[in-house]
Amino acid sequence: MTEISLSTRLSTFLRSFIIQGSWNYRTMIGGGFAFAILPVLRELFEGPRLDEAVRRHAEHFNAHPYLAGLALGATARLEADGAEPELMLRFKSAIKGPLGGMGDALMWAAWLPTTVLIGLVAHFAGASPWMCVLLFLIPYNAGHVALRLWGFGTGLRWGHDVGRVLRGAALGNLAELVSRGGVVLLGMLAGFLCVAGARGGPIELLWTTLMAVAFTAGLILGERAWRPAALLAVGTVVCVLMVAAR
Image (cartoon, rainbow, N blue to C red; front, top):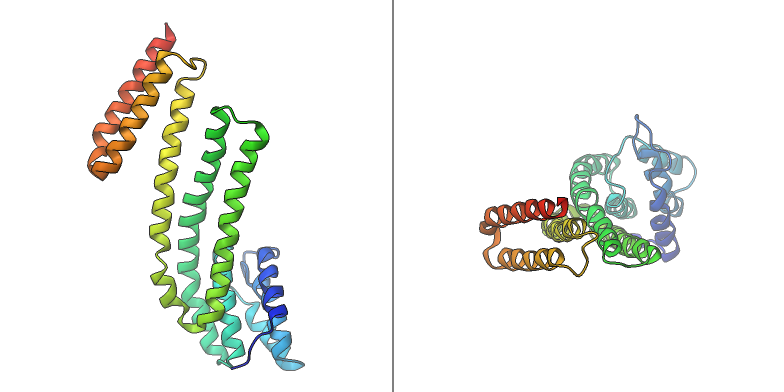
């Protein structure tokens, strides 16, 4: 087993941030994958063998860009271990689907909307514009960089066995947890919108009380609380709108 140098690993990881730079309909992020893994290939091969290695990694590959580093790290480990090209091809073909689905569910459907809602809630709570922007940018970028670091490091460590680690990572459960936090923030945002212009009045107090009661009921009763909580929320919104229209 050949050890990949620290400088090569760092260069490969940094290149993974622009893995979509040559995206196209034929190879998807295959060109970016080959560009990102190039430092590893240069360290391991030279001459015709280097050219052959670059060509095989420039073929079609697609995955979520934030989780593509997991495949990148694992493939780098396979190359360093001297794995057969056919094995690497089968590995990349098998892992690209799960990486795409998990990444979309965690980042695009959960993390991005939730961090956007943090900024929006802060805005309607009276925070300054710059603070709202930072409350979105800092959590969002911290999350995706952490995911990239975890994926690349895990791939480098486990190589072909990374699929087993990926199944045990429970990224689907994490996506669900983040989504639940986003739902809470969405409820807070709806409350702020309903009481806009009535700060300090009975409407704001009513909505704040409702939010606290619904949140507590959800924590205690779980999914059983969704129907009465939804009915109560809709009824309160209707009452608030009727009062505001007078």
